[in-house]
Amino acid sequence: MQAIDNKGAGAIVSEIATAIVDNKAYLSEIDGKIGDGDHGVNMAKGFGRAADRLDPAGTLDEAMQVLSDVLMSEIGGSMGPLYGMMFSDMADSIEGAEQIDAEAFGKMIRAGLEGVQDIGSAKVGDKTLLDAFSPAVETFDAATAEGKSFAEALQAMKAAAAEGRDSTIDMVAKVGRSSRLGERSRGVLDAGATSCAMILGCFADSIGNRLA
Figure (cartoon, rainbow, N blue to C red):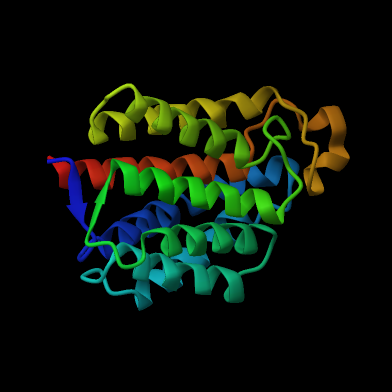
């Protein structure tokens, strides 16, 4: 099978929320090394609240819109608006779709990436979530262009996101609070890239399990 039904895929967002909540302490620990130390707390608050309100039996776009609304209006820090816009744009891209195949998913994550890029000044290499997100999207597109299955492209995306996340260890932060540390920001993972890789990895596994 090369597609999943959109109806009922709202449960995927519930699974992503569980992963974020379970990793609250880890994400805040990473953030605390060069940032405010509240990334995991804020993310877990937003994703946890959204999980309580969404309908797992509903569509993926409906669930992502609920998540977006919570992130935009109820959590602090810079990541709320960024992730809120990302999920809103992804929801818009698949609204009304009966099924989600590789083409629809590719458009969805591309829309999310462009949404993040539109509201921020960061570029790849600045030690932000884009260092995980951008290569993941490019890798997914390349895999589908090469004729790989939806499931294979998802796993390639997951691996690229993890590699992008890990690449931030050697980067110097160029934007945000951590940029004030200059060279002292090197040697630590970026919290946003870490949570982004976590989200994309959950998408890959959750959709992959439904394709099996």
